Length: 200
Image 1 (cartoon, rainbow, N blue to C red):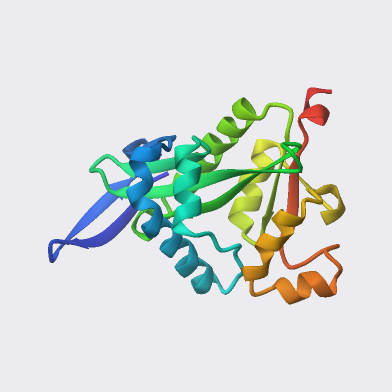
Image 2: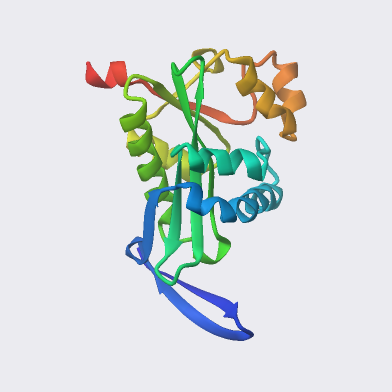
């Protein structure tokens, strides 16, 4: 998949023609904490542009995920930050969520989101092999990627009952809908990867 982008760097426009091979995707570390503010700002701006909700996370929270080795970060080969996603655990490790998927706007349409999702899924399966992996999303592209990875659409009742997870939805613009529906459904589609079912 190829994509062409125009960006402005040092007041001079240039064109970048990119594919996933132009990026390095790896497990994040404490060395990457300096990108936490940029990442959280982009998450919020992206959600506003889409007009959808998002569980807001602080730069400190994202930085901590990096230190714990529970995040994946991507860079263009020129060193520019390109994308990010992190892992959250719920219900004493029974459930895992791959959250906060974001791609730098100048690198979108290059297949990078899919590559990041595959990498963080691999990290989740390696780190928490017995955990069910789930996600809530309104994005069709993410749903397609999840389906390729083996996720299946489920009802909210099959997700974690961990109160801290649902508290994270309070910053979402759709939170009143979630509560009105008694947490049984909302505008997001719930998807689940169950390792026990896949093994069978």
